[in-house]
Length: 142
Image (cartoon, rainbow, N blue to C red):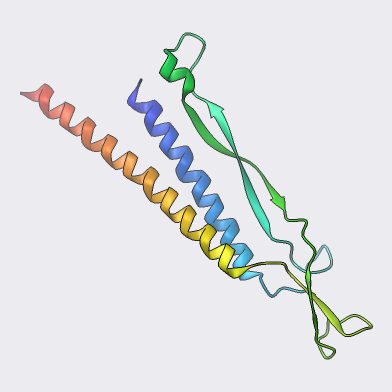
């Protein structure tokens, strides 16, 4: 296994977790948005991760099992909006109800913490790989 493969896997993890954090931050920021360009309240979004094979057909068994991660798409949550009775709100319907995004702030915080931990783990892999490379270079100099 090449160090560059390990670095590519960790870098793909960094990109995926950064996207997850960005999407989660957007969900949190729009938790009270009742009107969008598409019409209606904001719809929360989730990234969909997909594994991508690293090795080729001639690789070792271990290398054929290696996968990087890619954000295949970002999907919109299809849960119904939450309605609240606010008759004076500009977006209230005829009955006085306003549709708010179905964004659970506790769930979004948990997503944010999970993405942050995943990002940190991939960053640690890159730091350890760099330290190993530097140690190998020092051994070669002696």
